[in-house]
Length: 204
Image (cartoon, one colour):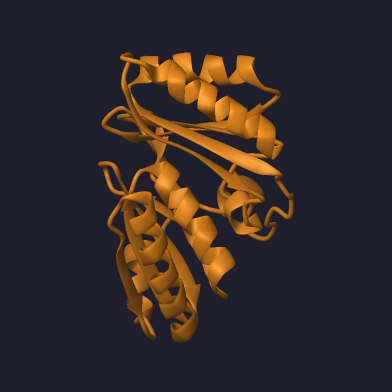
């Protein structure tokens, strides 16, 4: 099996592109790695042809989203490479965020989530005051449920919600408008019917 890497900015964009890749090609999502700034690396596995297909699709989708995707496929990775990218997850004390987003974080080593979500919404800001105001607006605007809050450092914080597509869209729109001048709105996206491998990265 080959290893595929996609590096893009922001949790919101990385979740969207991970969902796109797993729907676009026959690849497995291994997880997301934070880098200490806004960039996130998506790790995928699969055969070389499937990963190459995923990289083409993701690069095109990233361009539509207005970001540059750094992509790479390593064919037949050396076993020692596991020591570089496979390691236990932990919380980074500096900003209380996960170093990696792994499907085993909430599901365990042998139990992957098979839950089907109608839609998830991701609202990402730079600034904690902004995300609190935006989150309150989202919860008041529509019948949505909080999934989690994720931090990646440098005051980048994402709130992820779930519900039916219309409710999530209404909530994300309300949250985006509520940010105002309290902080910087980084992204606000809705993923309809997220792939189960993406769902497995999120708490139940």
